[in-house]
Length: 447
Image 1 (cartoon, rainbow, N blue to C red):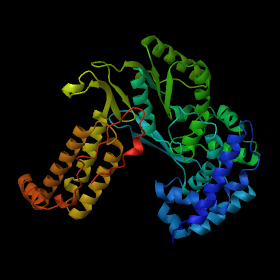
Image 2: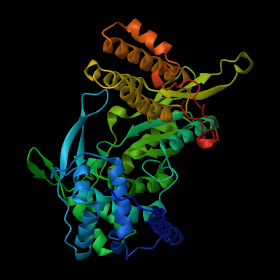
Image 3: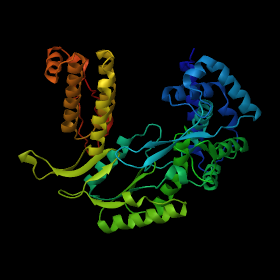
Image 4: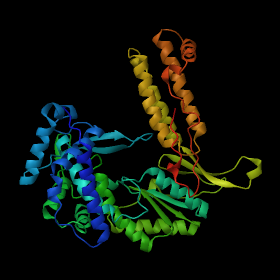
């Protein structure tokens, strides 16, 4: 029987986080010395389990899945973890290393999968330390932070373009998660944490290593992608970049984890911004990915910027009355559109003909809602209409094959249905971004 944290338990965890955040915000120089006992608090572990369970994920090197843990007994597992942590017996196992293809590219991204038990402990540590460092993080950082999203970063781009900053230096940090030096990361953590038990726990997580092709490999660098706590640790370390930028950078920095933009007023300023990024990152033991480093001019008939899945281009208003107005428009990149088509094709593949139509439509709708929930905040009406039409075409083809007939038969069945067999319609769901207007103000949903 899975554990479901009661509202009171969740509130206690949130109150703990609020207390830590307020204390860290009130005293920027304070180092916290009594955090370890919070990690093995039962309500914190239960909340951590809920987060791990919600994310699902594959098994680690022990081959234990979420379902296996539920059969074993969640309460039993959490009791064991609490006892091991309290007595100092807990030791992380190496993560299972797999390589997943990067969408649209030949290169593969390394992914490290800790065991379920280790993911629960990582989540508990993240619950405790995140509010402390969140009090220090600067407004230029948007990735993997509570109450911040990719659309908040995208809104900055719209606002700064309206202010006249239309030269953008774009890049990202090369192999950021794999290259962060452990010694320097621990120094960054020690700026706020003096609890030696918690620091020892964090050090053990970093040194756990990965198992690849049957061999355990450990390194003095990296907080491997796939770990629950890795994005938080990445932000802690790259906060040093944010602080240095405030003193040495040029233009407005927008950072989403390891994706970087410097929004500037001139080409010269943008080039100086790239130079500052290279210098600061070099001091941190990191470097820019040169293949993705360039300066883009967001002018009408100028360059196109790709950032967080959107293509950005400055265009002129079509209405003849406002032809003098230009604005920064955005829509899904070609790569994201192709990924969407590929996913729809997978869901309607002939190998799934024996599945109930209702199940196929339900899975299609789940994907379409997720795609629209992200890309509807933009000038994406034409692209959403294309995906809408493609999903209907694939479903019609699926219906035709299911009845051993052609696409035309499938279309007739789809059109004859009063609700398109339950397939949702994405038309009319877009929300155009406006400068200096919060993107969350128009909560329309896909039908």
